[in-house]
Length: 231
Image 1 (tube, one colour):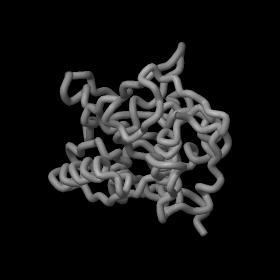
Image 2 (tube, helix red, strand yellow; image 1 turned 30 degrees about the horizontal axis):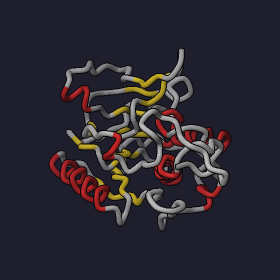
Image 3 (cartoon, helix red, strand yellow; image 1 turned 90 degrees about the vertical axis):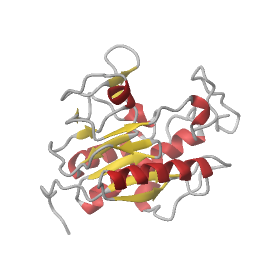
Image 4 (cartoon, helix red, strand yellow; image 1 turned 135 degrees about the horizontal axis):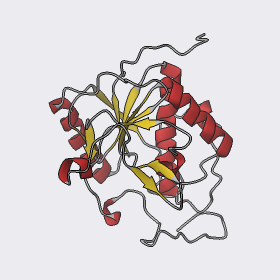
């Protein structure tokens, strides 16, 4: 039994989230894997919770910790819930393994290896296509997304790294609050430290039509059915 978090800040590897059986997701995950190989970044695939069909299909790594996670915003689509669960399962893995890890969505590309998690109890934002393609500034404080006044959260969860300390806090928050909003908005900058040390990865821009998260109209409003699911 571990009584304390270790200070081993060397990431175990990068985990590429993919929806098994979804051709588009698997193809993009392979593209991401190829970028990891070019960058000499150790990686492995991580099977996503699949919300592209009826219900949400659990991957083989589903465990009792994930049974503690409840959905408290019933306007979220199945895809949004499945996306959140996929990331949360990696937060749990980080806590259990007691080592930092890199989380990549299938639309991410690795630019250079991430070999050291430099800031204890913090999320490292690994970069974005705006920083690579549009010349956005790279600074210690990464770009944040906003909704409403003074509400800052992770600017897309396509590529970031976590250590066990911040993973514990993320996991504790979602166990307490449930999946109360979309994944990006769960990762609030006022609750969880977020830093950037350079561009290690970035996302390939995808339109709303290309995403595997289906069901939410382009204006962002979902339609609630009588059974609580969203179309």
